[in-house]
Image (cartoon, rainbow, N blue to C red; front, side, top):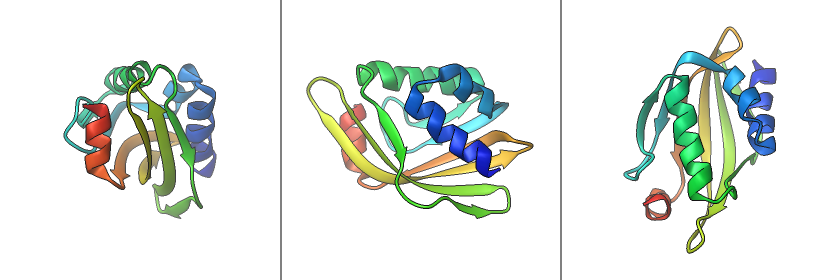
Length: 126
C-alpha cells in the first residue's frame, strides 16, 4: 500500500499521466472539495483524468502537488499531508491540505481532498 501512495506522488511530480492512471481503479471516485469548476465527485478513471488535465491546462502546467509531511496509514486508508500550488497567469495558489486515499489490491479506489483555505482555492479555480 505504501508503494502505491509513494507512486501517487512521484507520478504527479513527474507529470507521468500514464503512470498515474495505472494507479487508479477503473471505477475510482474522486471527491474534489469546494465550489468551483473542478468541485464535486468525479467517477471513473476517464473523468478523474479529464479533471486533472483541466487543472494542468488552467495552471499552464504549473500545478504542483507534493507530499508535505508523513504518510499516515490506517487499514486501507492513507492520509497524506500535501502542499499544492499553481499559477493561472493572473492568480497564484499555494495551500496545504490532506489527500485521503483508499487503496484496494494496489489500486486507488477513492480519493477525498481536504484543503486549508477553501475560499482561496475556490477563488483560484473559479
